[in-house]
Amino acid sequence: MPTSTLAFPRIVRIGGGASGEVPEVLKQLGFSRPALLTGKHVHGSGMVQPLLDRLESAGIAVRVSTETVPDPTVAAVEACVAFLRQGDHDCLIAFGGGSVLDTAKIAALVFRQGGATRDYKAPRLVDEPGLPVIAIPTTAGTGSEVSRFATAADQLTDEKMLFMGLGFLPVAALVDHELTVSKPPRLTADTGLDALTHAIESYVSARANAFTRGQALMALRAIGPNLRAAYREPGNAAAREAMMLGATYAGLAFSNSSVALVHALSRQLSALFHMSHGLSNAMLLPTVTEFSAPAAPALYADCARAMGLAAEAEAEDDAVAVARLLAELRALNADLEVPNPKAFGVPEARFEDALVPMAERALASGTPGVNPRVPNVEEIVEIYRRAWNA
Image (cartoon, rainbow, N blue to C red; front, top):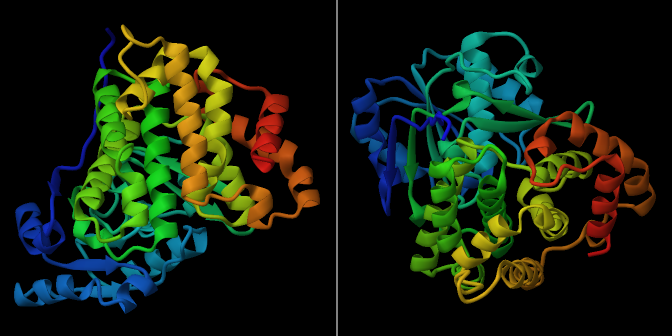
């Protein structure tokens, strides 16, 4: 078996109340001059105040910025870079959902290394260090707190840019499921389906290894039985904890392998039509899985079994397990009220005009090349059309 290279944050603290341990983590890492990036809604809700109080009690001064947007953009990254340049900081605390975390990770790199945001987009592999980031996720989905990937949209070109490398890996992650209890059902669904997509794609990716497949299966065992419960019962602490763990497992899995075709297509859809990343993933996951599964039925069957949808191979063959997985992905979208692009309000004529350019950009990203079945432009166009009518 070839050698696998794995990368993790230096510190990961997981559990209820972990977000309150920032002063101890800063001391452990030798930091004393933090900046903090969060979102306007999170800041306005009072959720970040206990953290600020703990820092004040520890004698640690912090400057706060709320200049983020729900889906990261180059403008939001540049605003964060400007904020960092106004102070003398030795680290950046990112407190929020995946958009806040991704904005912070990219901004920290650009701040330290200089240049323009676009200079660092994939396929460039960025291993140069950025300003150290302490990531505190408030949603259970992106896994950005433990990953070496980030995305941001260029609002002038509608390109969703991918950033990758050790330079985008946080030095610490504080994973606290108690921060997710107040999240509304739509956000819970979209982020949870994002985590599910990470788990499935990292498991079937051509870059998967023994470690990442183990993490992906643990993610599927956590997410499969608990996503509906977290959506329907926001105060269900056990379901929230399982989803947070599942999202972190899935983040570790894809960060050390890759995502695949769903993400390649989703980035184009979300950038052009301004929908959340998790929602665009969910729109595409059943259709892409149906396209891909014939090329790797055993792998997709493993996913079904980890989710509790099928018996072990000795009792039930892979074809049955894959059929149950496809049925469950469609049922999840129905139960969690995931719209198709048409129901989302995307104009059909604009969608048709965008199909070939979206397909070409997806292929140019290189991500489809690690999918079990590698599509051509015409096949991607057909996948988009089927998702439109799903």
